[in-house]
Image 1 (tube, helix red, strand yellow):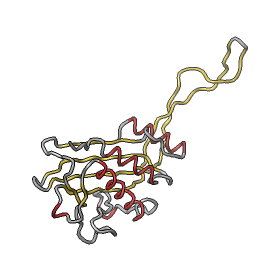
Image 2 (cartoon, helix red, strand yellow; image 1 turned 90 degrees about the horizontal axis):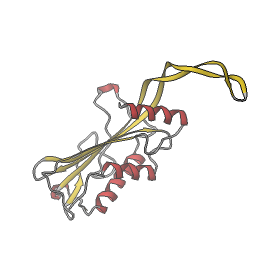
Image 3 (tube, rainbow, N blue to C red; image 1 turned 60 degrees about the horizontal axis):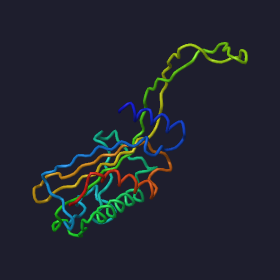
Image 4 (cartoon, rainbow, N blue to C red; image 1 turned 45 degrees about the horizontal axis):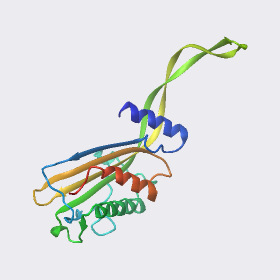
Length: 208
């Protein structure tokens, strides 16, 4: 985790809320040799059992590859949130001039996403000042002086991850991938938050 994300994680936990723009970390990778043009078709990548989503052709939620140690977080990872994310992707892809089709076999591209929320623990160093007598123009008072010391403490927070993949069926290659990580709380993954997150994830997907 970068120091910027760690700092924002601490601030988000202390503030009791997500900090828009601060706690957002998006990585985008685009294969420029694969053309993506307006009018090309896409469909959700089919999923086999037991991970099939409740809605047809909807991408399900996956956890990290931690084997049996990983368990879905019921506060976020449920059908309402997953369908909300899928609908946001559908609206955003269609708004970019791509055409959704119901038959994955007839689509130029297959879309898929993975979604997970994990509890994180980080050791954070915070400044600690030595109390003492501070004197100035108006006299003296108890305050702080001298260079700060540091103390370590543990910060607990939840990190949400959404990974989006866009496969080219013609070449059987990945045309676009984006991964977003951000600090989440109980109010995250509302309609507005999801749409904003999907917008960030698709910022590098610009059909000609």
